[in-house]
Length: 628
Image 1 (tube, rainbow, N blue to C red):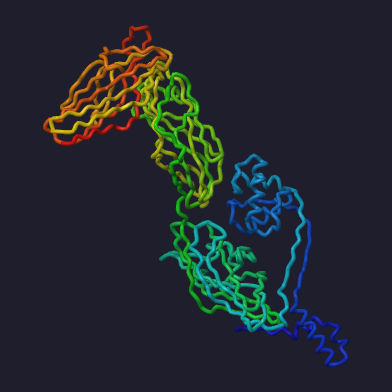
Image 2 (image 1 turned 120 degrees about the horizontal axis):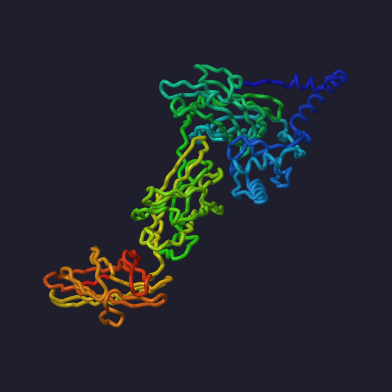
């Protein structure tokens, strides 16, 4: 333990002329004792000043948990503007959050409590020229009968691995303890001896890696030191890979029989990934200087240690997508008129790995088959993205597939929106679809959102494009609007007996003409054991062990085509008989797939070439079990 005994010198300096006026040795000793007692008592200095308060953003996102001078400058600015944060302590807490969100709301900004590319310029503008009064009080420790302290420095630990191009990262912790047998001590400065271990064959100067060193106690910054210049370092050796950085002004009291944990934080420079990353920063020694209540200044050290942390590249920013409970089911969109606000999907999106700035979002839509000789502008006129509470109109809609489009993309300009790790927002897209002309190639197609791409800049300053698949988007069946199917009633029969028995199922469907014209229904397409089959109305067909017939709702024969007047509804029954002869026990499935129809444009005379529309009816397949 290295000790500097300063008692006599301090006493002589403080006594000055008083010592010369002392009449006896006893009087001189009494004066010295009185002064030494004063040195052990609480000493406070209060300074009040008024200055211009300004805030200049350095490009680092300020959010909950942020600390440092940027936060303190912002707090002074906010206090001057009337958005009180209490004491400007450089710690982003609940009061700072309330002030920032109130400011954002007043300025019409996105209310997220984050100061970034959108909010920071507003604060800079608002704070220019504002005045503030700052009061600083420095308090020393309280007296403990002027006892000498017995201090130890130990329990050095690695806090976490570090990321490239990121500030205020916890690297190490250490503890300072004042023994109960002695007095309190005030830690005045900390010396850290550090060594950089680059990857094999690499070179690294310590001052090019660590730009700033900060000391915190209980989450509050107590001192910091810029370290991005070789002049800031002592005893540089090993090609400037090893050196000691001194952080003064720590001024933290450790009471007798107490232990205080100090946290060491580093600002890491923007390193070249190929040359510098994956290096180690090794803490080799911690030394503290303190003054105790006896007025004695000492240094205490851990001695030689070796605690290592790694500097790595940040993981790439990513987005996790989960289905929202409001995500719609498959649906049919009747385009006999414009349909605005058709919901394409509703998902929950979570930001992962890095903070960043979102520049654009691009959603891709696909048709189930190409729309021959068509223009995508005839189908979709506009789109809207809801991103949390923000509503963004489409910036550009572009067809995919040229003259025979197979889909389209919609790009939304996010206006450099700040996003942070663990941000979760509801994301949805609504389409404005246009009325389709007779004969449009889009009729009968199915439209579905397939991917969503996020583009911007991450906190590492790198551009990113992250594309995610939308697995749960509903299928939008595009219809001319003349046909509507109601839910089917299914009546199933199970025959029990020998394997020559038959099973029968009866499906009932209602078809409504729900457009501006009459329609005619020609046939029904269905899936029978997964195989597509088509039967004309009024006809019967057979396929292997199956026979199918379609009649009207009363079970009477009909002749195709059946004309249904606009606004009217007709009922049809589909009867399936399964001949089980020689087949043993089993089951079959029948599912209605489409009803084929054409629009009646000339009374009962149907124009040649009129398009056949298809409408998918979602029904659960009805199983009929056969038991021998």
